[in-house]
View 1 (cartoon, helix red, strand yellow):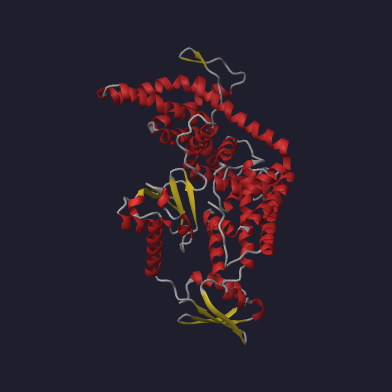
View 2 (cartoon, rainbow, N blue to C red; view 1 turned 45 degrees about the vertical axis):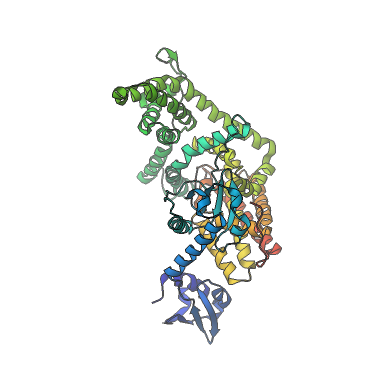
Length: 547
């Protein structure tokens, strides 16, 4: 019986299911009788990673499938990778700690000088090697968890839960307190530590909010008066309206205070009674324990609760240190909240609100100065910024106004389009590649990036490995970014996913926004694919850029 996954790959290249009059299987051989052989692509079938050979004769396709790789073979391959990596980092005696993230093995070594970085890069199954402060990172790809398990068994290391770090999160460098880099790194780390855990909430809320715009305002399928339109509107809005509560939880986890106290503090900021006073026109004077309070609408805000939970961490630790244990269960949470109420309502909340507005106006000011060219440059060089970790502060600044309801026409819009230049590079490389193995790898990279949002395999396994695709990435990103900049392409919904769903964030109140976003994305794809195809790449002599 032919597996569905095999047919899914074969049928389109055989002219589609309607073009098959009969199908017969004998072991690893398939015989497909075609209605119109001109609709088939035997060369494309032969290039599939699951096909050993393909011939077309007298209206019949004869396809020989490759033997399925056995699970034992995969295990043996992971074991071989683990053995070579262990040797390359200087042996188990040189490893102080070992963890992993989505695609990388992360080693804290006793003596990094014992590690053979060049040797590690040459291991079949290793995409790249990255040196970070105090850590050596070996990029493996999607099978990193299996290699990690084998490594732990070999070296007797305690298995740890996969960490959330990836290219979009970088460790702060120790020993440089007080410098601008340290301060900006701390801000980025704090914001990302509070926002990254909210990604599922933000993604679902954004999709639900997008559907009424798509199905109602754009396509006219739903009426504004219909129940489903109203349901999608308020359920999507709920996730963002109650952000202070969600940030209260994630912020408390990040800064080491009691999560339920963070939730309570966030709930106070959007309590209906307080919201009624904050939205009243004209606002009435209000004091907290006799201290004048600036009334602010805190719904859909992030920074106020990030500041509040950051300070609450210090306040709670102070009381834990000095209050006797027999009184701690009652007095610790009570006194913490009593202190945080005036600090939050009278100081941290208003300051956080002003900072959020200030960041929004700052980014708008930068955009107005550099215009479409600035947009295009961000789109062109975003991948390099990502590789170096320099995108951290930009994302931390740009995502806050977006989540607080302010559309983004600069950083978030440009960075989202840069992914389409990457898709174009993969497509161009696939069309240019001469070896079936390279095409198979690029196909896997595309699926991993387009569907799963995991970009490291294509980044290290192709773009940086062969260098010329990086040029195509930059040119394609600049071309599409320039079109988007002149068309004022805007992101309206925060879609914190790096796969194709990110495109839905460009859905605005008018069809022109998504149309121009689509045109710009198409330019990114086409230009990057064409430039990759023209420049080519040496499949025999791939060289990685220095890590």
